[in-house]
Image (tube, rainbow, N blue to C red; front, side, top):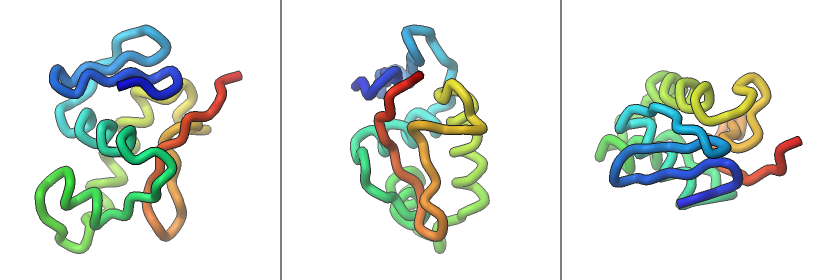
Amino acid sequence: MTAGPITLDALRHEVLRGGRKVKVTPTESRLLHLLLTHPGQVLTPGIISRRIWGHDEGGNTDLIKTHMHHLRQKVEFDAKSPRHILTVPGRGYTFTVAAEH
């Protein structure tokens, strides 16, 4: 599965960013897969919790924030100014394919 500069092999939990292999955890791989399969959709913490961990405990936002932070560090070219994994304040997260400069 490829979106912009990011390629995910979900079965192997392997990610390429701009053609270079990036090491991700199985949870980060599942998060990225969820985002890539729902481009442009806002995924709430509840949806993310159900899809990744199989339950919704009010959408553990701290746990999700931590995993999203780590995933951004690995797949974004500039994690402080993300172009793909975006936070939608008060709602959740979305994935977009933005042109790289």
